[in-house]
Image 1 (tube, helix red, strand yellow):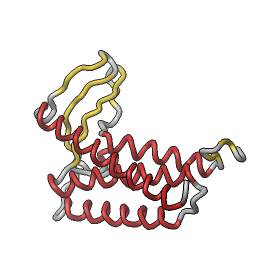
Image 2 (cartoon, one colour; image 1 turned 45 degrees about the horizontal axis):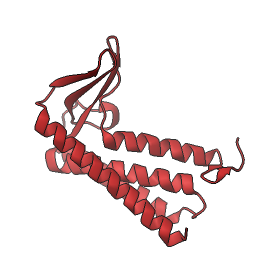
Image 3 (cartoon, helix red, strand yellow; image 1 turned 30 degrees about the vertical axis):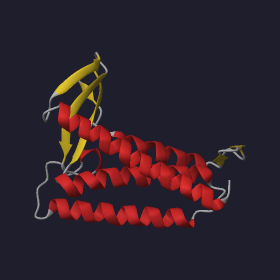
Image 4 (cartoon, helix red, strand yellow; image 1 turned 135 degrees about the vertical axis):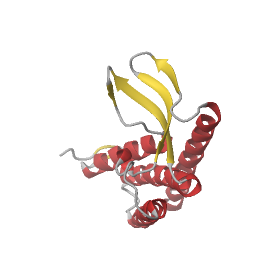
Length: 167
C-alpha cells in the first residue's frame, strides 16, 4: 500500500472510532439515566451511565475550579493537535505506531466532542470483580488504550509484517 493509501486508512480508522464512540454514547444517553445500570455479565460487567467531569481515569472529577470545562477542553484539543502533528511525521514503515496513533486520535476526538458539547464525557462500560470496580470507560477510551498498546509494540520493534527484532 502506498504512503498516501496508509494515510487515508489512518484517517478512516480515526473517523470510524469517532462515529462508533458517538453512536454508542448516544444510545447510552437515550437508554439510561445518570447512574442507571444494566447487568450484562453478573459479577463482572454492567452497562452503567456515568459522567466524567475530569480528565483520564476520573482525575479531577470532583475538583471544581473556574472554567474547568474550558481548561480541560483546551488541554485535550492541544494534545489532540500534537498527536495529529506527530502522526504526520512518523515514517510510513512504522505501521503499528501509525495505526496506534489513528486509534488514539479517534478516541481523543470522540471524548473531546463530549467535553465541548456537554461539559463531561459519557462513560458506560463498568467492569468489576466483587466490590472492586475498574474506572468506567467508553469506546473512545478503549481505542486510546489499544492505540497505546500498538505504539508500545512499535517501540519494541514488532511490526505488522512480522517480528523484526524483539527487545
